Length: 215
Image 1 (cartoon, rainbow, N blue to C red):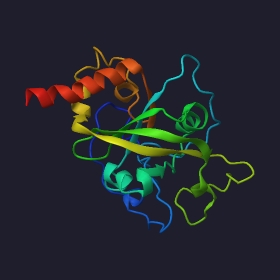
Image 2 (image 1 turned 45 degrees about the vertical axis):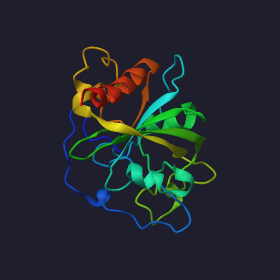
Image 3 (image 1 turned 180 degrees about the vertical axis):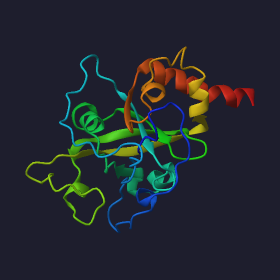
């Protein structure tokens, strides 16, 4: 679920090696390749401390539906998957230091014709070392990350429910100067893991209902 561009609009990117589906393990469900390489390149800078302030309990997490869709999460064992492959220090720090069990997740389909929020999920396991960084055969391998001194982390995410309709990026952008003026997605769209305020979450849930009533 890698963010597409630093702009607030998203366009379908040409498929690259990062877009091809990896071979699925027989015993472990995985949400690898959620972070788009075209959007969230490997960050070799030193990790930065999370921003101070009230802790958020809502997150937006991006995934390419061609590689790991909401249906893939639903069909995972117990509708749960680890969220591996994040290779950006800011996103990593959010997962490692701030995400807590019970936090809500807005599941966002990106790098698709109609990007937007498609479902709700929940954090069910807090940050722990990302095993794909230890595997030389993985495209997410990082020789600097070891089991003794892991560099990358992941969380486990469990499906809660699908949205009654997709709340598209285009629709969210209509409120960029209004109710969603501070939303990270509309100002720092490239980051694949983003905090969401309670007020933004409430507004998005209202949007989910509106078109259903009108249509």
